[in-house]
Image: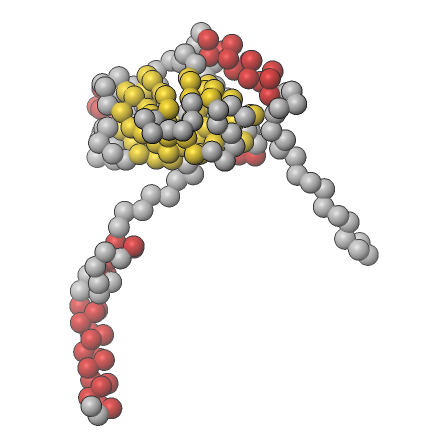
Length: 207
């Protein structure tokens, strides 16, 4: 095949690629064509009618923590008319295939507000106190059950109550939760609490 012919074929292939929609990338099933959810935590965007995003267990020490997540209506819902009818989160437990135990303290059912979403990591809302055999770095399958009977299992990372998570707290003023929160804070001040300090850097020679 002569060089001019090769150049013509290459030019024709390039024009064909430009003619198809951008998302096709002149191919099929590319990673850029598929849905991609980037969340700092576990998530579920299944068929529960709600989306569970950025789920974490914020732990003060091994086996003690606060479950938090953002729970939201599906994007097609109208918060003004649909939020009041949305199911509430009223139970959490370890998922069916979990190798970790997980027990939740009593909590007030969590409802999305008229904005269509609720962020349990916000101290004004509060998360759910949980205990079990997990520790920082664990990935715990957490089953969330809603008031309409629907459920979702979310692969939930356990993070330390440090840095961005230092202000995370359980619900307050809801029966046993208030006591559980104070007990957790008390025990977290003991020798078993995670250490959030960073090691001191050595001095720079000549500085």
